View 1 (spheres, rainbow, N blue to C red):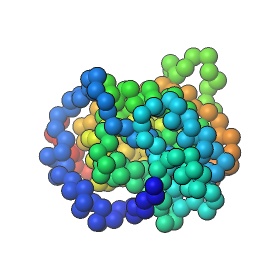
View 2: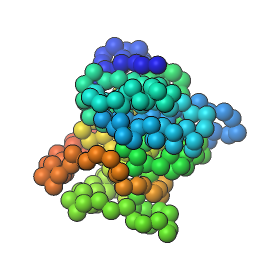
View 3: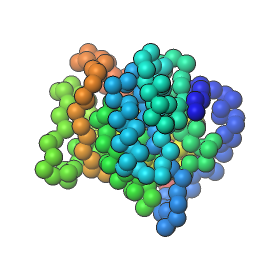
View 4: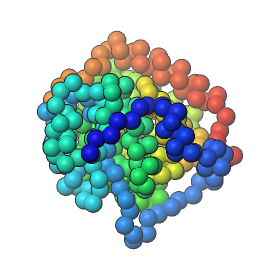
Length: 275
């Protein structure tokens, strides 16, 4: 199955018919999934991940049984969409590379249109074990609106080697964690994690407005200010086996600067719920 969705399309938003934000989110409350079958989607944003995509799909199918698996092909120029379809996954193809934010939002719109109650997301490069995503989904089933996998939480899988990134990325991650924690008055240790699970309340929020460049960081601020229950779950992530990250020290510094501006603007936005 192949679907093409366009990021930020007016038609898509009209079809979803989102209520006004003040009507959508009431006071913080939990909605545990109590012993019932929940319709789940695990989606994988992927851009030129032909070397790893089949293994990622197989891992998701093994550790999240009963969930539908979808690959959001972000304008790949290799065999990523072909291999994903061959592995039995749904494929949503963007017409050209638009970035991880557009890929995420595509999945949220798809999930809402097809009545999925919980989404889990993991990267297509093999860094996110599906067994850990299953733990995030369990956190949502137990009441969180948004569960975020943290590589840096103190009790993240003792005995497993600590996740290590470059110095520039670690500096940025710590700075973002400090800023988001300060602005939301909630402690976050891993604001750039793309390993997440979320329910309909969070999907509705992000389907309507989601940053194309600063997806992970800004969405945490956005979710907390909207009154959603956001939880961090300690997780283990793996080193990238194939391909190279496009992030360099120079691009990291520029990204940090731009994200600081985005967070400051987000802090000035009116809250969507009275708290």
